[in-house]
Length: 288
Image 1 (cartoon, rainbow, N blue to C red):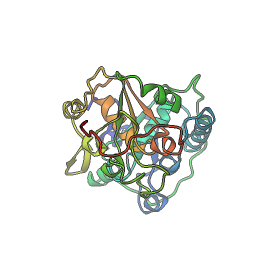
Image 2: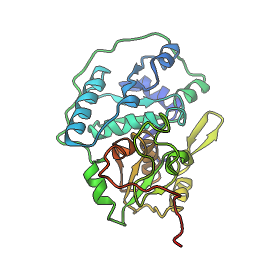
Image 3: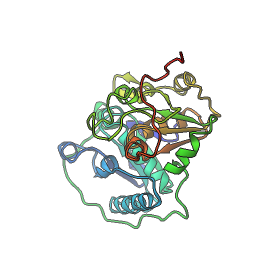
Image 4: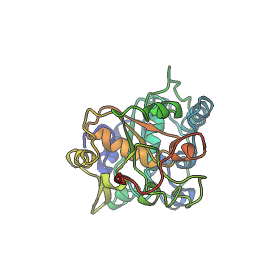
């Protein structure tokens, strides 16, 4: 990978010795209490928060996470390190934290490649102690980052064939058998956004002795080429609530695809508005 976002366990261990770091653990509180990287702070809402992309919804998201990350000890001078259990077990939640911080304009963000599993596999120290960090004033960006698109921009993108609408959900969601990872009927409608193409998010990773890791840039570009994505292609990614899309976002950016954004409301928002079009039936069905 390019090294801009992902950090390996050994590199993180060295970084923690040389500069201020705030470790954000996105796992559930039970996992966190059992064992975590020393001095880490548990911010579970990185995974659980369901966002909408209306003006009010995005304002609420900004307020929510500016407070949460400030309470975790981020002031703008520290490097934020986000991690989950492993890259495939948390539906991309560490990358969701990365995207949230990018949207909020935070200057220094890294994702622990391989997550807590890779840290443990490297034999690095873990802790069960709970620390309460000193809250800090989270920096206010002059304007939110352009990493996210709202529902209106997504509607406009449907008519623009230059923009690839990339669905990265699990296969049962893509073919319309399930509405979400939370249950088949969690959302009122099943299907996909019209004109979307599909690359299941797992395909951006491969097994290693330390667990699932992102593929090389060349391998990721090869996966993207199967649905017509090149480094110059504008891409909007969606999933159910932005976690798996965030995982794919990191993969595509690290591979050198230059114009990538996320429809963060994703299927959770789109499927609940009956005025928005959806596509059902067998995908890629040939015309008679």
